Image (cartoon, rainbow, N blue to C red; front, side, top):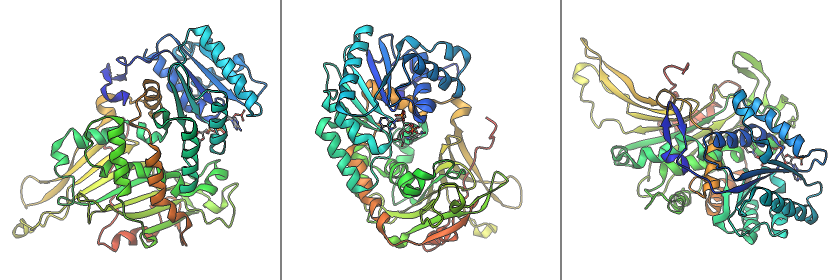
Length: 507
Ligand SMILES: NC(=O)c1ccc[n+]([C@@H]2O[C@H](COP(=O)([O-])OP(=O)(O)OC[C@H]3O[C@@H](n4cnc5c(N)ncnc54)[C@H](OP(=O)(O)O)[C@@H]3O)[C@@H](O)[C@H]2O)c1
């Protein structure tokens, strides 16, 4: 992953030691929300860090025939402004390298025209046929776009050709397999970059460093020392204007099958033989394949009812615009996973994710085993707080390890305090995930991208829950899910931990 060796310079993370080969970056769906909010700002930041080199161009493709190069250039400027980039950054947008190609029908003729336009741009900028095609398209059009690119011979070139596929990757196991088959008809796996933007987050990458660069933790990372693992991926927002998508998707597809599966894999995987993409991805695939089939008894589905968010009254899910008033779609899932491996046998992995929870938070809590005897009982104290390691992925990236200390003086008393580290405090601003991932695409590093087998292993695990007979429990917007989620853990004598927050949220 390209950022792993990034240098810290005056508080800002730079990537100056990476140099991308001359290339053309083609965005299919280049006028959409993702391009505007994420891709264009990320490309601009990379250009500012001077990693993209001078020989490059970007071509946006969409159906709109009213748009042209000039129209796109103005729109791109607006996107950078809306992303809060400085006037200087916006001024430095190199408009002469930006192009727009209409694709009104998506038929073979359109792709022929695209191939011709690509050659023309490559000629104008002296580019060596290194091409990245980013599918920032509605997922239903992924297959036809792949087919179209191949029909015009754009799946191969004299340089390198890479295909970036956005999420969601399929709706279930069968559609994921079909999409993989379609991709593999025309592209080899080493050309394919399936995005899960969670993997681009610094703290997700740091999970690997934390585990494998610090033997102190790795030696404890097993069933002999760990009692349980909890993963919380919480959003405080509702579905906003995405009812059309969300009501067909639900939390299992939107969060669990992709992001949560990746977090489970990174926490649970074995040590890879090397830090190369194939070795890391192989260990993740192995881990996902070792998770026991999930019993529906170990799953809780929830849906938010009216409640509050940020002190304001908010409607329930069924009252949201565009949601079927009879909808059974889950906005919350809690489940228990059993990892059938030598390392993890008997250690429950609890997962919960949902919308309209009390706050936005992605946190992994690893609870170590309590001391085997209550040594301080004679002093009137029994240590009841096991050590817990909290790895926070957002919003305050960092970690905290809770340890018990003696409160000075008498009577004999213990207090639990955190040993902690927060990224922003030490490194200042950290790069956006898309900045990391785009650089990886352009440098040909697949470590942080999902392999075909990984996507299918995850669907094999979670897909059956889509079909299962389910009860959806209501929870009040602003609560941590339904009571049934607490009962799930209580069955084994556990409880959801109170999430920890950065002690100073102002940084
Ligand atoms: N937005 C995000 O924050 C976000 C986050 C994670 C993942 N994603 C994924 O990124 C992809 C794009 O999302 P988005 O939010 O940017 O969607 P969007 O705002 O709806 O934009 C879609 C883009 O694709 C073009 N398009 C639509 N239908 C097309 C067709 N049949 N053929 C060719 N072009 C077509 C649209 O322009 P025309 O209508 O002019 O063709 C537009 O440029 C989706 O797969 C989404 O799941 C998005």
